[in-house]
Structure formats: C-alpha cells, structure tokens
Length: 240
Image (cartoon, rainbow, N blue to C red):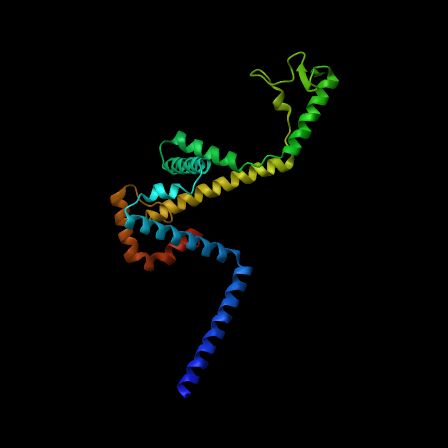
C-alpha cells in the first residue's frame, strides 16, 4: 500500500513538472519568435528525412514523390531560385579584374538608395524652366497623355551636351558620396589585413622574397621578446 502511494505521489509530481515545463515552453514560444522558427525548421527537416527514408525502403523515387506536393508554378520558381543561387556562387570566385570590378559595381548599385521624391521634384522643375524659356513645349495627345517636345534640341541630353556641368549637388548628396568612399576604403583595408594575417604578414612588410620572409619569421620567434622595447622606441622616435 505504501509503495502504491509512493508511485501515485511520483506520478503526480511528474505530471506537475511536465505541466510547468510545458507552460514555460509556451511562454518562450510566445515571446521568442526565433525559437518557434527554429522548431518549425527542425520539424520540417525531420519530416523530410523520415519521408526520404520510408521512400528508399519501399524502393520508390524520393524526388519524384516529393514533386507531387509542388505545382508547376512553384517548381519553376524553385528551379529559377536554385539557378540564380548557383550562378551567384560561381560568380564569387575571382576570374579577372574586369569581372571583379563588375561585381563591385553591381553591389554598389544594389545598395544605392534613390530618393525618388527629390528626383521627381528636380525633373518637374527642369521641365517647367525649359517650358518657360520656350525650349520645351508640353503637348497633350489624343488619349490625354502629356508629352514634352524638345523644340530646339537643347533639353534632352546627347553626346554633345554640356549642361550637366552646371549641376550642383546638395550637401547631403556630397556627404553620402564621401561616406560611401570611406566605407569602401575601410572594407579594402580590412580585407587586406585579413589576407596578410592569413599569410602570416601582420604588421610591416620586412622581406623581399619568400626565403627572406621565412628567415625573418624565425628571427621574430626567437628574438621578438628581447627587441620589442627597442623597436617601440624607434617607432615613437624616443630612441637615443
């Protein structure tokens, strides 16, 4: 009888503990969406592996069976995504300096944020100014669309146009350009430091070839602790 009561108490304690942990887990899921996303991802991976194992045991084609759950449009979007991902991965490797410059240009264009409101304002001001001077005429077509007609050929830019030299960008645009150039230079120096660190070239370059580099590294390993103070004094300019 005492053993039965002990088992009942143990079961009651276990039920209370499970309820408490379930409540805490529910609270964590309600307050932490990342945890819920992680659990859903793990559940999807487990379901995928289970379906693959069952299909292989039964001797079926897993890829064909999985394709039954996709529509034609979803399959085409997925193939397009995979193709784009593969092309992006292949494009990361260094090919030549022209391709490297093209990648930098595409990344800068992708990160460029255009102020369309300011652009439209400038465009309307330019059209009104040209229309007031008589060089541009606003014509309404039969369907009600307004079309700007360049009467003397001076408004729209051509290869011989020089009107852009009179444009003065605002201060915030200049500051944005300076910021972009500074960030690009910092990124270049950071990559250079990482590359030099990977090759064991941290600090100043004190060698003229690979053999000399290895010899200097051997000297540094044995004598750096003795010459550190002298070298620091030379760099500060306080060496007597």
